[in-house]
View (cartoon, rainbow, N blue to C red):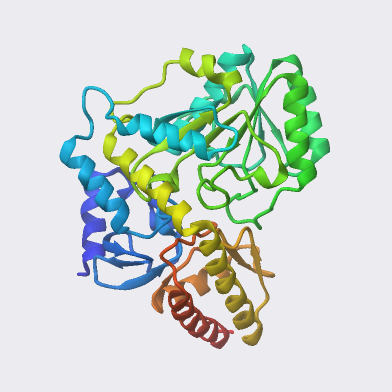
Length: 404
């Protein structure tokens, strides 16, 4: 029996469902591994020894590349001194200073472990500051796995979501109607830097929408909360809506800020400083110094190498190659989202059957893609890696065409 299959059998006996959450591969095409042995740069190896060029980057946390030597050196140096201690290490202050200086809207920062921690802290802070309850969120948006926001409501109650009001992303009329429904009880508007709902075309915000959200929050004294958990450190280190000259009051970060080490951050402006100090949020591992040292090294390296520009260029190289291949093999595909966070969908494929088969064929050729979720580029993706991946995807398109 292959190692992956054996580990799945063992896991099923001691873990409900064999695994929890989004890392379960039951929703992926047959052949995708559940367990991995190691990773380096933009490549990873499963427990059965198969090598893949990685375009999921641990579903976002790996931004410089797996096992980046500079980040690892910083983490190991801190680990020799201490990690989870009776209080934080000095690196907490150094990281807060650096991060607050990096993010354009930020007057302060605080840290946690997961994206859900960060979005929930933002919501709690907004409610503490305003004394209000209602929160506007986009239809279909993902903001975490807590009862107030999880897309899978088993075990939650209607009361958990009683104060959420939904609007349609990029739809100004819908936003205005949601705000009217909230009335004078509006605590905040939660918004993603771009629409990255699962299984549908990604949608960049219009300048008018971004500016309307800011104007609405200013008019009603509510918090503009930007959910940077997925986008942070991949679109703009200063904040993803800087290009619109729109700055949030609060923002939630995680995933890529520590290159795979568990860390989340909340940044805010001075209007929300006292409220952030007044709420009680904590965790036994939230001041872990190793992840903070890794984050400081990650952010500094991203700045030094202009990592975002590199990821954008590599994503564009991949996008252009896939477009040429699809056309050559008689397929019509749609590529959406920023190049460094791409999604590839097939036309006339509402159930993603073609996309699923294509991804399975690409996996067999050594390229790890996802048929429905946005993917992620890293700084470790070099031109040769993209070209190697494109050779494999060309064979996958050819095999898919042969199945018609």
